[in-house]
Length: 195
Image (tube, rainbow, N blue to C red):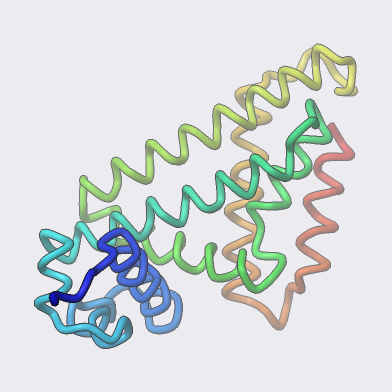
């Protein structure tokens, strides 16, 4: 009797292996051979589920983004305005092991996205989604009277907050001796308090 294979589970295992390789060794080390070895499969198994290395990488990035979206949906359920914005922004910072791995994965894709339009398009789409969520929550906060100033341009505030998330994340990953998780959280909360 042939062995029954759960194809969705096998794809998830390969994508988890790809994430581990990227986070641990960098995106350049994420060869199909390294991913297959990490997953405990042959290269042939990968070829059965993915067209090429880029499809594996894109799928790993999309899967990571979906996990983040799912977690955020649970965190902000019932919250609006600044309370929801606080949760969303703090969740996008590498303040624990899980989010540190997610940030390392994300940052690993940045340089590769500069050379791959396919990856860049995924990055742009996902970033647009996050930007829209931040902008909408700022608009909710303004409508609820939670913002100190009613004159601030919400698009500018959105870009400022997203740049702060990216900058603090990158600094924490690159300069752990200079910046601690508690510092990053404090700096983000200070920025939100100024709103």
